[in-house]
Each structure stands twice: as C-alpha cells, then as structure tokens.
Image (tube, rainbow, N blue to C red; front, side):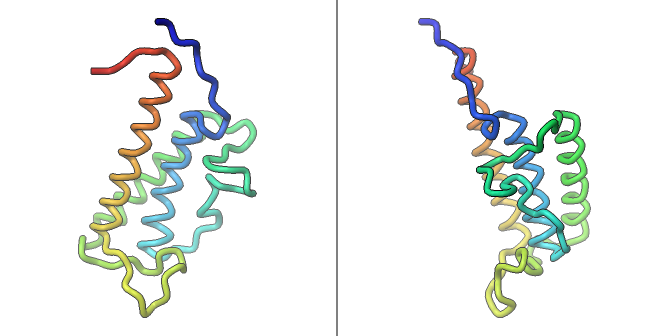
Length: 134
C-alpha cells in the first residue's frame, strides 16, 4: 500500500519544532533556572500565531545557529550549578515563597520534551514517506 504524502501546516514542520526546542532551552535554563531577563522567552509562540512560530524568511541556518547558541548557554549554566539547586524564578511565574524545581527536575523535564518531539518527528517522517523504522 502506498501512502500519499501528508502536508503539514507551517508551524508543525520540523523547522518550527527545531526552533521550539531552542526556545525551550532558553526558557527553562536561562529565564527560569538562572533568572535572566529574556526579551522574548516565548518567541516560538509569538503574537498568538499558534505553536512553533517561525518568522517570515527564517531559514534552517538561522534556527540552527539559535539552537546551538541556546544549547551552549544551557551547558554553561548546568556546569556552574549543582543538580539540587533550585530555579531562581522560573521566569517570574513562581512566587518566592513557593518551592521551585531543582536543576535535575528541569533537566529531566527537558529530556522528556526532547523525547516527545523526536516521536513527533518520527510520526511526521513516517506519514510523509510511508517507511517504518525497526
């Protein structure tokens, strides 16, 4: 049986997902854990455009560079902290008197986020070409 190719909305394409993962790194580790001021922590959900927003003309090279910068920053933050350290502000969402997640909790959450989206990519690829991995 031959499957016909499936077309995905722009926001659900792999490039949008790639940018989303870069923003997830930025939000959880720079903005949330480290408490840094971030101009656009929700750039992947910009202007109510739906999930995984891409700017007009944003290329793979643009998103790749952004992703690599966020991952390098994440590695530096993790290297300077202890796994039991708590998030500074969680992006201002958690009042100071409430428990904030630890670095190890955040890292495990990020692992789950990546695992979910790798699954999404596998489904998208399978729907596009019909090949099933083993």
